[in-house]
Length: 325
Image (cartoon, rainbow, N blue to C red; front, side, top):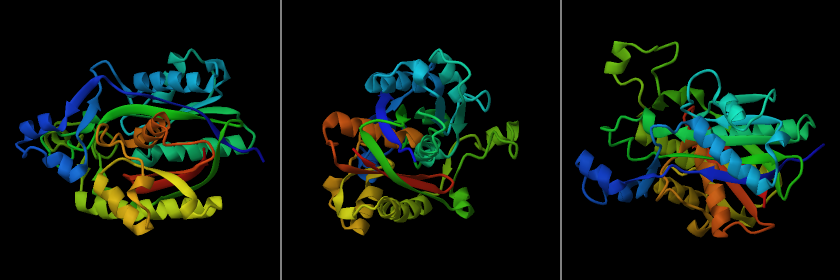
């Protein structure tokens, strides 16, 4: 059986920075409140002419440059996104066009914050089955356009970004194993109800703000705190790795307090966890690959070390994998 590797990584960030202090003034919150509750100091916001497709294409260019691979060697494109450019055509198909490619399979994967790692697992299965050799997997989000900017419980958390990887049949960074899961019964605690066939756009859905994100923060916190540690443990077991041998954990960047609680559950020091949410916020499907890129840039990922990638979010879904860097 062929093995799956990460051959290249890359990211794209919008230029505009929205500081938490600016949000605190707008929302009537005390100075420093947002950082104390979430760990987020600032986040990036997409420009009016930026969309998941345009940002994913920019991230793809960075990934291909890192992998030293021409676009024509790409055999499949998977884009994980919570807020696609439109329901159809797919955002992945738009990325395909922007890269000057034709005929290769391209599809979106809609699974919110866990979508990127679900995409990596899907790509790895194609690689290991010997069906394809090079697959782009990108998380691309414009979360700022699904928020109620008057709801301090949600709008303070999120940012916009795109980042991803090239999953390949050859490379330096071997993917050792995965753990995926979901609990659909609790899906209502984190939802975007408007816009689908159940609640198509109407004056009523707009009036009731069904086209903006709704979240039961307490329920999501408890879910995430438990599942993050569990997901890391399960991926380590399935990969044949001892937890103590994992050098770096790259968690979904949603809330610093969730990561701190997960560290206690795993009995691991916080210096084993990579955090960039202070200046990125929660970028949903782009969160884990963005952390991966920035951990590599900072030198936190060294050749031969074991890294755990873990995410959780709407669905409620979770995913994790172990990579031998």
